[in-house]
Image (cartoon, rainbow over all chains, first blue to last red):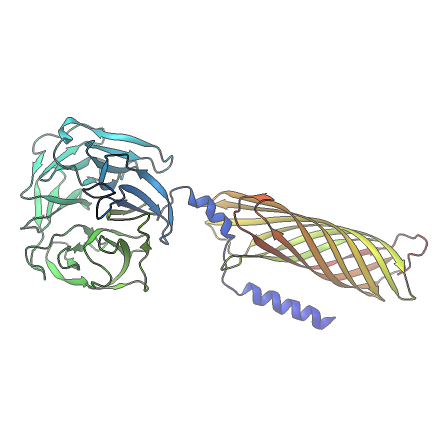
Length: 316
Length: 174
């Protein structure tokens, strides 16, 4: 009898030494709502979803572990999605819609979609990137070379807006200091930095392996002030200082990333980089001036739910 | 005979990659009708009821998962002098409550089986102390409950200690 008790006691102890976890059915509760750390991917492009490269024109929500949860928005017939940004004040997700020429928003708590900015001045060819500044104001590339600005209450800004930039815009990204960065598709395509009032704050040094024709899609500001810029020409990730001076190659592996597009910082501090060639998003661990791939597989690899990932964001 | 007492209870739910574990306390009560079939051996028909209040061992400040179970069953108990083994079947009520980062309730009611082994220590002619260990199993079917979409298996282990009271009647001497 005593030995039976000892056997049970040892068995119970062994059981309790295993990895602790919660009942997985609990996750069902999180699967139907937006949580901090979730990843938002805008699958978009300039053609309809039935034409190569078959962009989905949908906004998908993924868990921090890369599991698809649900769609935040699915483009209606004729709607081309492009850019997206998170409003730091209201926490809404703003996204641009070409052909209907407006910016809509998703309330991430109620998941209700409403129109955010409808303005006759957004009628330029191919509305594209959108970014939100610290005060909730929104800058929108309403055509290839023109940037409009609207206040948090939707009032259109005047001089020096609308801004006319030197060449076709690829993306706009808000950064610290109430500034925003514009990346370009044509040479010279060194990203430019603007203050919220539209004045030019600086230009990224173009010295990098791809010279002056890099086709950078996105820029991410790291917590220490450095910047990561990607290149669709050379497929790499490049490191710049807080004063936009080139440091070196952060990560380059064309078997992992080709034609990188949207980038963002994950809640764990690592970099998430999506790419159009493989329709995947890779997690890159940054240590010093070097980046390494986290694990052996993409964090997100599901072309049925994320195809032609243009923009990627993380829910704060 | 009547038995009642408390238990230390341990449980886990199988069916996911990392089975969660739960620990807590419980209480039980039993009624037995004893039929001796030899000088020192006996068979009894038992009805049993137990409740358990458990907490997940992975609880932290972000998420607290608690589990309450109750089981009502009938079965048989075989006495070999003071040693006994029991087998009962009945209904298990399962209620898993989550509070914190996620708020959810998962409930089900399933058929369960419990196997027990124990020992009765005689204190007086009418009162004894019983110590026993039990293992209970119930399948969890999403069609029987709410809050979960897959099949799981619930396993529960109890180390019980209690008081045994003999209610005199003809032929009921242990």
